[in-house]
Image (cartoon, rainbow, N blue to C red):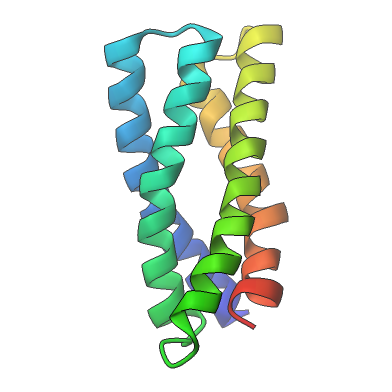
Length: 126
């Protein structure tokens, strides 16, 4: 349970970086579904880097493992996460009247809990 809680804290910190970049880009480029999806992906890149560093060193204590293998595995999981987040944002902002910030929070939580955590624990940092 402690690992799960630490992973969620790392995800929150990564999400803060992600959301800051995302919100800045949406404000600069507009609220169209395409721009929201692109900003989602770009924010995820920044948040993913922050999350990897924290997860590797603190959450899963894998600082001694092969960085190259972990980065390669993380990139695979991260790519899936970016695609799921971008697709979720497109679907919610295109087909529903949900505000883009609320949509971003909902999609992020669902992908983070049901996809990212389990794959990081069982595949990336095993």
